Length: 343
Image (cartoon, rainbow, N blue to C red; front, top):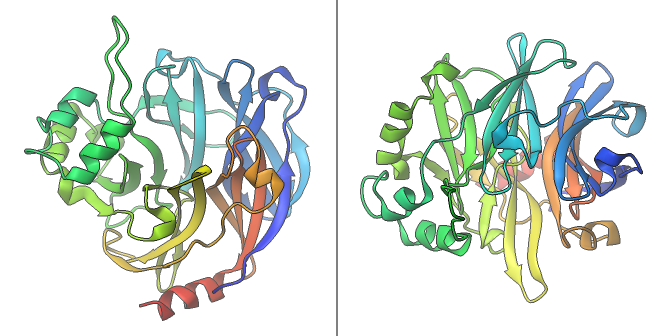
């Protein structure tokens, strides 16, 4: 098994009103020796915004804003902007996040040219009602049992005057175009799906109608191992290596103590056809073990959302117990070798 070092907590909540409950699940991008974190900041009432800090090197905090960098402005995000991820494609930064209105949670996008000001593009998740998805009306017939059971488990009763939309979270872009197309993961439990489009403007209702008519064709990864037996979801943006795209994702399993969320070195994906999974690590890369990972706003959580590479050392940033931002490190070359040896 490849050795992973827990570096400890990088960022804690403060007494500032916008982050006095928790900080967690940061979007991460490295520029030079600086690491930029765009993190989920939670205030009382479970409202989330996106805070910002800059690290000097992989661990040391050099700068931190005392106000949200990105706040809720749209009706779709009135309860919060959650769990951001970020990549740079060409000269534009793509920051994806979950927009939560207190009832529906769906993938949204903002872009920036300078990491200081962001333009919101609204929802990029499919506009499909929960009832349509469950009935198979938009999926070309009855869906597989595991998807039906998983969605039924997370179903909640509609409130008067509200329409329950299909929850679709954890939108994560690849950091470059592949064969000229923008490619991103999204997550309808229990698996991970993949979308490929020429431009964001292609994500029309007609596009999604066609997509869901062949929904099974777009599922490229499902849970298969014990440590991810309940469901899996996107984690960090994929990392390009000579052997394929390294994907680190999250998995969850039900235990007698409740749900346990582990970080998993998921796979190597084909560089030019990333829907082809070359290999997957058969064990969790790391799991909750320290008190700050096992006890918090949500117990037993390590939720990876970003990485930074310094030499051969890959630093993985994650939300710990839904309350702190922590970091783990691993040799990139050894991790890739471990994956190759598992073929």
